[in-house]
Amino acid sequence: MSVAEPADLTVADLHPALGDPALTSMNFLNEVSERYPAAVSLAAGRPYEEFFDLAAVHRHLDTFHRHLVDDLGHRPEQARRLLLQYGRTKGIVHHLIARNLAVDEGITVDPEDVVVTVGCQEAMFLVLRALRAGPADVLLAVAPTYVGLTGAARLVDLPVWPVAGGSAGVDLADLAAQVHRARAAGLRPRACYLMPDFANPSGVSIDSAQRQRLLDLATQEDLLLLEDNPYGLFHSDDGPRPPTLKALDTGRRVVYLGSFAKTVLPGARVGYVVADQRVAGPGGRVGPLADQLAMIKSMVTVNTSPIAQAVIGGRLLEHGCSLVAANTRERSAYTRNLRHLVAGLARRFPALPDQPDLPDRPAVRWTVPAGGFFVVVTVPFPVDDALLDRSGRDYGVLWTPMAHFYDDTAPVHALRLSVSAVTPEQIDVGLDRLAALITDEVTRRAG
Ligand SMILES: Cc1ncc(COP(=O)(O)O)c(C=O)c1O
Image 1 (cartoon, rainbow, N blue to C red):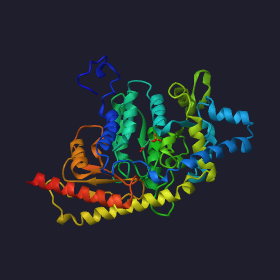
Image 2: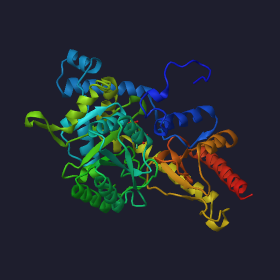
Image 3: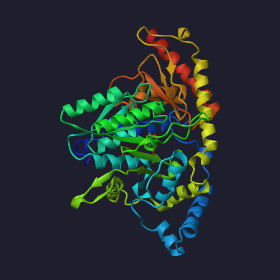
């Protein structure tokens, strides 16, 4: 934005969310990447681009088209209309999503309870828009929180109250305390948002027993849970994954948010929400929350591009609706990278006593997630945007300040590294540069 240019409007006269750090965060991080294109990026949580295959996109489209004609019995002109015309607000791959959830997650859903959305981001927006009925409503979210969720909440004027995550992924005592605190203040906690599997940004997962306790607490407190699961398939061992909250949900407590960005293609911009909660309407008519979300969607994006849905649908069909099967190569690359990054950190920061330290802070530490894209590194100094800029300019490595994932201005001594968009060789280079930055920073502050 040019300073000298005459302005027609001021941000102060637009929606208060504009200019809020939650909304400017993603733009800022993208701008830094553009400013230092030669830097190694351990910042981006994007899929590895060498996996992208343009020819496969055409094939997926054809596969889905054949499915419409051969499996579902559509006449050619109907199939063409379904792919190219305005379409069903709740989407045209809902039946395949239901099949995928059954095959990969053991979740049984009625396809009518699914809304196919423009990325998971739209799904979050629709759910928050629906839940925010009035000024007493608040959303609880496990902190640190995905900034896209915080930004969407801002846009619908829904305050976000942080709930401690901790090493268990969600601190149930704190969750109960926040619910009680909100109610005591005359507020209405509508839901708690969390990522039980390899959370962005913390990398932490919730174990099976804690998932069950969380569901019990949600029932006890009459609270919805918004389960966001973009990374669950990228687990590093061959043992069974813990069931999703939705798979354990016998009381329609869980609204399940899905994304195909990491498991198929981010450029398709397709996600979905499973919202099977029964909503009583005027005249006593009861229907799924999905129908209410579709009503909102009809005024936001009308329907998700059927061409994009067809690409996702084709990919699903080509793998028996299993994204586990479709992502064997991706899972092994991401888990290899994760192990490589963690081993690389251990080599560069071998033992705490050898590390430069400050009196009030431990030395460099990092999380060791069992999957997903992200590792959090804690350092003995506050990590802010100015340091990121310097890291890109002087050291040639990018990462994400953890401060972006907390909804306050307190200094945060941690940064997020992502393994998804890089090779092991790039991880080595990136870690050498990060280690130089950390060492220089500690030395500078000690001196
Ligand atoms: C936790 C989480 N939720 C949602 C999204 C958005 O997904 P989509 O690209 O499908 O909109 C992301 C993207 O990185 C994410 O990390």
